[in-house]
Amino acid sequence: MIQEKQIIKIVPPREKHWVGDGFYVSSIFSMHSEENKHISPFLLLDHAAPKYYPPTDQKLGVGEHPHRGFETVTMAIKGEVEHRDSSGGGGKINTGGVQWMTAGSGVVHDEFHSRDFAEKGGEFEMVQLWVNLPAKHKMTKPRYQSLDKKDLPIVLLQDGKTKVKIIAGSFGSSLSPANTFTKINIYEVEGHQNSEVNLSFDDGTNTLILQLAGSSFIGDHNLEKGSLGIFDRNGISINLKTSEGSKILILNGEPIDEPIAAHGPFVMNTRDELFEAFRDFQEGKMGSLPD
Image (cartoon, rainbow, N blue to C red; front, side):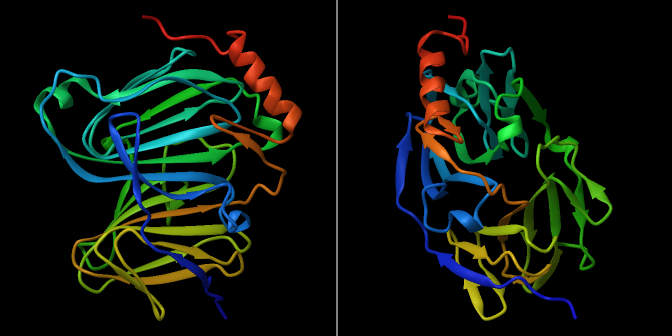
């Protein structure tokens, strides 16, 4: 008998706050929450819900800042983002694209609305996800993966309307080109009235479902816009039905059951490693961005 993964908690929509002057976000979860055991290998998720920005000649976003010990995954649902980092990575992602930055041993980077987008203005929606690195990979060499919309496989389900975009991992026989350090599946699903989405994951993995738009039903549970469903590790299947205009972000991954020592932009395993990260940044060992 196929065992379904059970929802253990539904987190209601969160209050919004500004990150820099370009990202008006809800922090959906963080590594400091009481559900951390059921969130790993993911650390933090910020959702910048759809917001209109008028044309401007200003640079809107977040200036130079460091990271070490994890990865940032930025998904452009609507709009454009430009990124630079001290390892030489960077570029622009357009609507539907993803940038995957492995901070590893340490980088300094910035991220802004693209110049083209800022000049024209428009509706902007983004998701940024932090993904932990296992201890053995925390000091890996930084890398940057830029994934355009055309690079990411889209699977059309049997109803001929429901779309599953594979940002990481696999869905059926389709694979994302994203390289990851642990086994991770990330999907963006666009559903319609009574669309049925049947998911299959490894037993013992963590699964999170964020309702970006519309609503979904998972058994007796209703996920409204902005809500997060957190699932038990046990089980291998999740079956959901969506409403018209439903959009869902699905995160699944092998948990990293290791100690976390985190403060601000650094996520390590021990306090000594954390102090070392701050010292290395202050001494300029993570590099800097050109003027």
